[in-house]
Image (cartoon, rainbow, N blue to C red):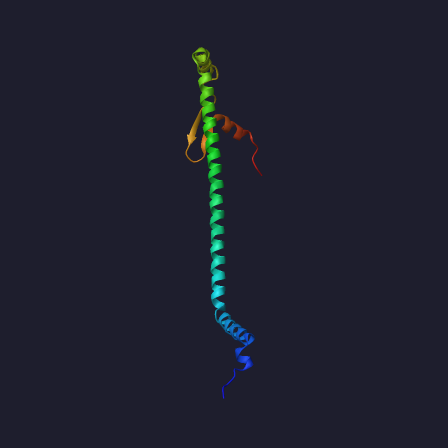
Length: 137
């Protein structure tokens, strides 16, 4: 007597069910690997974002320094141009006369001051101003 296969063993439905059960076991066993891959991917994306932000911040800072350097260069060039225009041969005589007469007429440039190492300059004008102030209570 020849044995006929059972309907449950040979039907496509039963084979699909067996495959589904085996895939379910495989997924259940590999759940930690998927979580590890997701965490590593998110960590790498976060590191790339932090690097991008720090690079952008460095670029903005460098651009600010370049702008300040350009402003300083332009101010220096402007001052040099103004000095060259002021100290031309046509204005040299009157400028020298003004500077030499200012020293003689103003009494040598104002009150005589001497420097003290600890508290800065001490002038005759400031001493008299201190004497004139009333004492604090």
